[in-house]
Length: 142
Image (cartoon, rainbow, N blue to C red):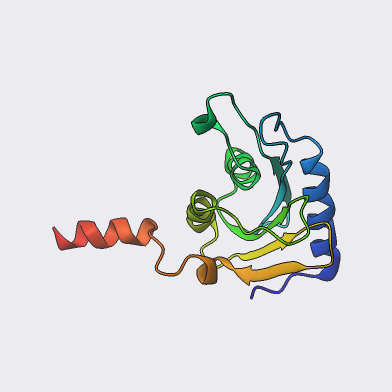
């Protein structure tokens, strides 16, 4: 797992918890916050944003990653997710795929309203992921 100083982990967790308070989740009432750590050390936050057309909702993790990408970040070191639950909630499949694009070996941490936490890597959550290397491999076969 990529080493991250405890003070940075604490900043990530506080940022994710604060982001959850900004969630727009009138339908599910499930406020999620995320904080991503760029290789530069900068932290970007995101919350889930729902829509009456459910397919147009966006998860907190993707909101944070898209904010980082919009700022020019192309490499993530860690993603921390906060959910208002008793057990940690891992990122959904779509979020795992987006994390893979910017941090295929990123540390993924999920925290909740209890001391329980999930602390793993994206490779463990999404083995055999499809990514940029998959496209290059396909082009090489032609």
